[in-house]
Image (cartoon, rainbow, N blue to C red; front, side, top):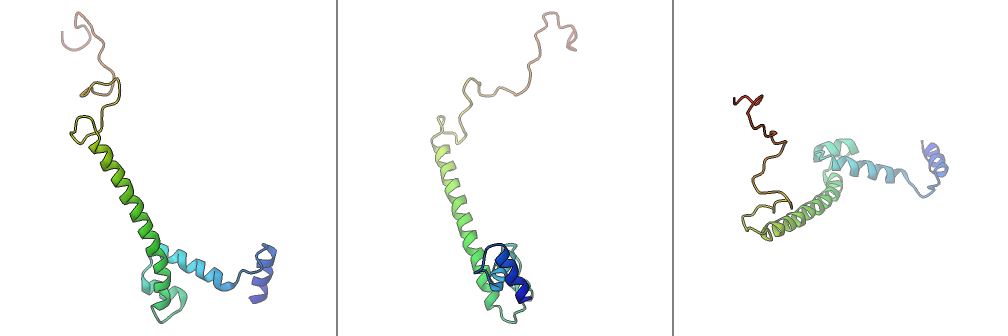
Length: 119
């Protein structure tokens, strides 16, 4: 196994890559799937939760970054609402469109009402 790994890392041009590096990457990715501590322990072959918690810590940092990005986006959205022209908390209507206009085609005007079900 060791000789095969050594040959493979030399072939891909990564002579400093070690088996533990691959194991670390695999366990970090497993933790990002929201695997339980017990599941990670079984995957890694450990009896202690300490090692699994290391990999879950990396996931927690990523979660904090995502939460901060969402917080920032909500702050921008709230600012846009406050800046709306009518102060109602709704976004402004699009230019050239009257408020309350319905989407879709308008019925063609027919002066005698023929063919529209009204006559």
